[in-house]
Image (cartoon, one colour):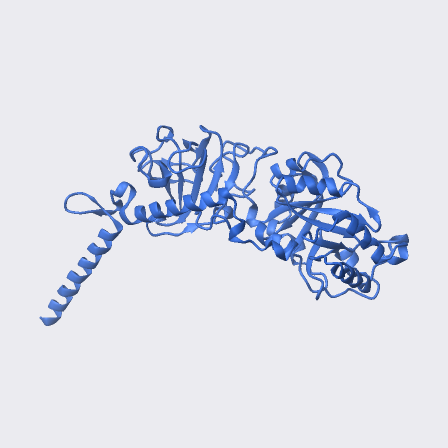
Length: 458
């Protein structure tokens, strides 16, 4: 299946049925007015330019394409200018063929292409389909392949969200670029033992300023390396300055001479107890099989230690994290199925060669879930509340309610209350509405039933 817009020309401004827009049936590709829109597959146009300008409810104008017989989907795109539509009912289209241009007609908050996929027969009896299943990194690009430039947001393959973890190794790193590059979260180092990360506070302020979801981590050192666990947590106290709303992950990977693993299960538990005794929340543990499975005393159970953040690299190639993640299997990446202490990963660090926000190298991570779900893992106080909705969210809900009312009316009465040509016509040559069609069907069934009864009487 082809993307409906060419890579590099758009950003995703609203996803499919998100937390803030649970009734949003498609994906909004935000792009400048005049950006070409393409057919995602071969098919036949059900409605297009023959519809009167502005006659299709909240969409303003739309193009509706029914896939060929071997394709069970319908495609609908809305909000374009009527004059830009190049196809009309009955036209045959090919995948990747230009069909219209982006605009902001109808009930729209800005220039974008609202794109939907439906099961047959589309909006008059089908159900909406999550387009992210098809419009990921492997989707065909109309007009040939082109990498997405920094600042564009892609449709995430199979629903994962991406983030990075950083420390003082990432100097002069504006997190505005990280956000613009489509990352959703960042986990920032507090300290390495008693070494206080000098960039923690500036990284934290920058991340929060630009709306990234934030958590922290502590590179735990074994007491045999010269500092007690309590002394290390003293440094965390100084770094966080009383903030207890940020979770602290325990990074378990300290090695000594010859690669000896120095931390034991007892050290991990002591670290967790010390943090919690001072009022900090511990989301869980970071480690890798190379360490966790070879700790002195044997591989510890994860039971009671919280969530698991694991490093498990594939080919670990340099590049955009979405590309390298997809190349190593995406949500089927081998790391997701490999447990530590009988727990499979909740967050997967799948590489250390990421190029994010024009910076290299960066550790890159994936989470198979929503931003709200990850926020709750980072800290339970982050459970989403309706009261936390932004003004824009409220406007979108109101707009969705208006669209839903218009959509319900249109499904019942057809575009412009003019019925649906697919349902046939009455004896005045008018298209039937869905209600008319059901009534006609009921009448036909009753008539047929009477005929059967009469035949039985004979």
